Image (tube, rainbow, N blue to C red; front, side, top):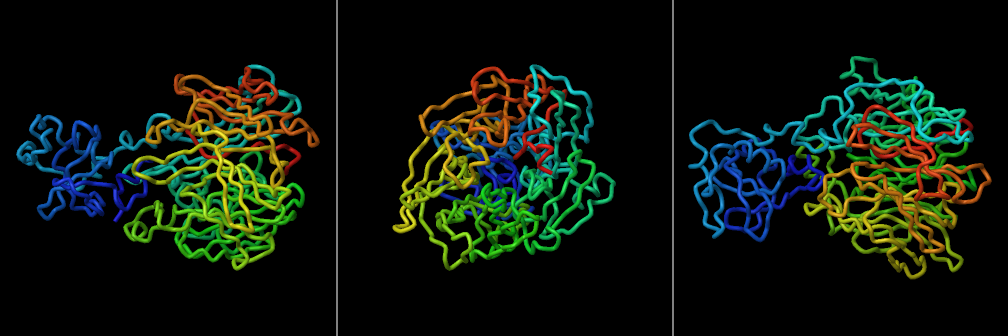
Length: 564
């Protein structure tokens, strides 16, 4: 069973057991807030003075009373009990059980606590996360500072922007995709545009024709990343749909399977090998856990390799990395949950620590039998900065790591780490580069698969249960000197992922700019910010001002005019 209320809150999402307690204080596995339609709210209580956690008291429809710490259930219980509660409602501090039903009066009670969920109670549908109600077109954007003349192209960012979300079940991973674009040329910001990705669902809600092209998988929502693959701008998502080819001015959309060469799903993170021009991706299929593959796309934009990985337990494979010798596979225990899928979860993945936690080194032209599996400490990796082969034969991998994922106590971010993998002994040595909470690592992409010096990351909230979308700062790590620089945008400002743009094709690593969006919740606006890496902590080179808030998203990229 799946607690749909837990799934609506990022601190408890996708949990088959939300950690409820019954009135005797013993564990209640498969808590009855699982959305079986019979749960009825009885009241709210706190477990004890020592544990200042709100719990909701639920009836299971068969005369049993149970407790649940699902935040949605707690909110619903609070609303239902408003005006009826007193100090004798629920548990007393002496752990004496009182008749909660007596405190509620004789009025009708809701048959399902989820019916009280609203957009205001789902954190991903309100506040900074509130979706944009419509597409926007703006011209001649205001600019502070001076945009470098060398920048000519488009900044594109993809993210979820639900049109008609059910607040009981909504999570950003399943939201309708919206792509945002800003054109820059001759030191000016010529326009901003936002467009919904015309999936079948979004098109029906917009009353328009769906985007043409070939679809694969159980759905065609594309909402995670946007970038160039073999000369085409693609909107991408993992585990499901084929990507969507986009015009640079966002005027057209066309689903593509790379001219009939992609058989399965694609990835949100294909990475280009700057030495060969090939793109590498690790793909998987959401509802078919045995389908995972190493996909290679050549310079012409055709899939030339789609090698099965033989992973039957369905790990969530968000990112990958590669070296001159290997493709790296992150097989970690955030995995497909069949019970969650059967219960109707729109994102049936959960933390299952009994499953393998390992990194696979697959020879770039090998198969599943050739993978060198190396166990790592219990972890989940959304994003790798880079990997490369050391002179002694070991593999160097820099990642932002979590100790758990989809966990009731929050997703514990361990910061930026270096994993040194020995293919001969299969040992992995883990060292912390910076233990501060951070995510979205990026490097100069001309260094993919080779030794790198600089990594940019985005600060994250210190407390894993903090509902904020991120921290207010960017970090720049120099791996040669060990120095860490900080660019803090200030209170109420939330930067998204920033990427590096070199000044010239042959400029040195770090000789260039960083570009990304920053939301200001104080003014409910957004800026596209350009930083000079050489004066990282100083004032931005330029800010392009947008008069509205772009909701937090996932991934953005700079697309130079010469890239397509």
